[in-house]
Amino acid sequence: MTIKEIMKYIESEYSVINDTPCEICGGQYLAEDLNIDIIDDIPYDVCACVCSNCGHEKNFEFCAPFIDDDGLKKVKNILN
Image (cartoon, rainbow, N blue to C red; front, side, top):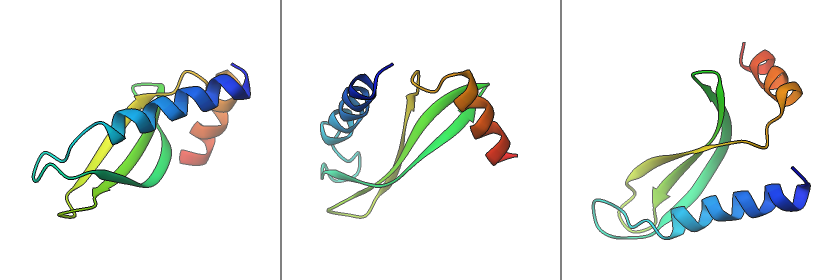
């Protein structure tokens, strides 16, 4: 994937977050932190969010296809 394609992919993740109302009060989630996690040997963008209205916390998980094999090995080494 090119940098432009990766940025479009990440933008789409934020669109999902922005279009998802808080399940407690209906407020809007704000992204606080973004990490790469390995779940069942698959890399995911995990975005920790908080509701701007009530403070409810929610994690959004998105598959991260832009992490290639070398990047996946580096991420695994950092996590171990």
